[in-house]
Image (cartoon, rainbow, N blue to C red; front, side, top):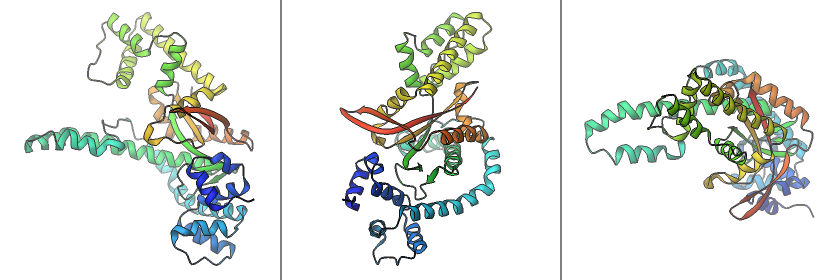
Length: 363
């Protein structure tokens, strides 16, 4: 029997996307869900010449599914909507990339989206009792932090749109135009949630430990002490790693030069290993999700690596020609069954998903 709307909806909410993809009606459900906004569904009914049912907006998706509108008609509607929206962005894209290159520093200023309000409340509103002191802190600390937060958020927002458009412009990709959770686009019939990331420090640490190599930070601290370099005491581990890497790299001693080369060689070898077989990295990325954001949806990971300076990998998000070349090469060669089947564990349960990694690196 064909999959019903209720059955398909249950599978979707249970993260069983691959069961949906294995069924023709399930694939139609997912592609229709990518149009799940009232104005898009109304346009779909109009495009196929079917009278729109007299139901509320919340029931319109179910009505469209039950109407029997074909997958081909759904795809044509989605592509038409995307083309129109894309033309508006394309007109400004060159200047947008130009503006993105003006960002010289990627520093959140200690503020992040998930705890922005909490940080302000805890550190300023509840902590300071003197009005003049509060004003000084706002002027000297908070405004600087907020500026960094806004610039980083702006940079991430627009580079993400540019990168998604590179995927969605490809002939083998069907855009999800309705901003559906868990799906940014389909590569042929496989839905993917795009994640842009960098070489994870946690994964790097695990691989160094497995290779009986001491942590990078430990080795850099030792080199700093040996060569009389200052070690900051007010920096978190990630910032201290970058700080000491720069100081040791700039020192003229053979010991410092050799250490930096060894650290760089290990990272570079790991990148080559990931390009050859990303299975371990993919499993690590799924198993090390934040608890609040956990899901087992299909993910396509875009891993950015600037081998000239690993700490500048964030800059590659605006390197549009480099990004285009690598993404298009992947999409041209991945075939109809894009991605690889991955099994991973999460809090005692076993999950199965389809995922893959595209490494974009500047050598």
